[in-house]
Amino acid sequence: MSIPSPRGEREKLITALTPKLRRHLKIRAFEHGMDIQDATEHAIKAWYTATEVPEVSTDGAKTWGTFLPEGEPDTFKAACTNRGVTYVKGLAQALTLWLDNHPSPTTPLTAQPVVRVIVANQKGGVGKTFISSGIAQALAEAGHKVLIVDYDPQGHLTSELGFEDLMYEDDVETLLMHMDGTAKGDIHDLLVALDHERFGERLHLLPASDDAFMRDVALSKVSFSEAALERSLDPLEDEYDVIIIDGPPSLGLNMDTALYYVRRREGELADRSGVITPVWANKASHRAFRLLKSQMEDLCAKGRIQVDYLGLVVNAYDSRRGKLVKENKDEWEKSSSPPVLAVIGDLKEGREAADGEIPLLEYAPDSEHAQAMRDLAKELAV
Image (cartoon, helix red, strand yellow):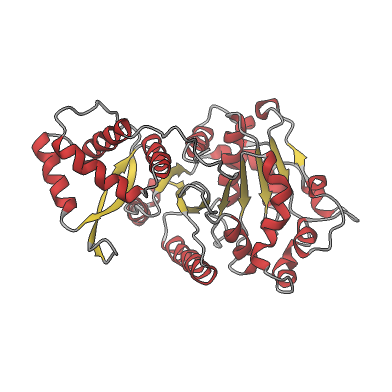
């Protein structure tokens, strides 16, 4: 596959990187005023002539791709064959060597805004709430201060965390009122804390409300509606390391405001904030993904913004469901942009925790489901 580029024709190299090496490359490239693609190209060219290469571990490497000058992917693969290393090992050596030779400059990295992530898919039932809640819990358990926003009008996150009553309180301001400019109070008053010792008072919820079903209609009357969520959450941002949005199951203004909120801000690292999409290993999820991606591209083109796709999560996977399920899972895993961050099995702990209105990491902290959430949390550049 080749693409036209101001730097000439380029071809895609698909291999794999560990999450840790990918994060280090992203930050170091930014510090040196480069994009990841150029840093990778320079790293590979230096590796060709290196007489000593570092020892590297590629355990946990996940599919990753980049564009190199035309013909360079084949040249790189041939060099790996000559050196007796896999493509994954060769790339890891090249990037590690580049990192060693390009230390962080003495000028510190520009202060980065709060990490903002939306877990989004307009197709219902694929596990948006499960993934967004689980990642938030894992980050809080690891010591980060996290706000999770129930942006789904159905309010599953709010009810599954045991706060369903808050959705129907009378005479209480809501997120929508802060978004449409009718609120008089402080948005801090909407927040509730999960008081489990595991989270150390670091995990807060902005619950759903029963007026959220009217959000698309209300936002259509708001000037520059795409920024309505950002304006509302701005007073909270300095107090959190991460803000996670449990996205709405629809395409429209509601989704546009959430996508705009997680756009890459001026001076922000690429792939730091953005979109995570849970999918199932079926054709319906492939169609839903294309629709969401199309909406993102349309918003970016019209708004002249950049929204980064952080990755996909194949959820509720069970190979016993047959050949087509495995084929669909394999098709997802071929994607390098966005990459598949995790394949999570169809296990019972998540359902039991939701039914019991108990956070997953509190209900089953040693379960496979809980560990999958901790691994996903490590994918974020926090």
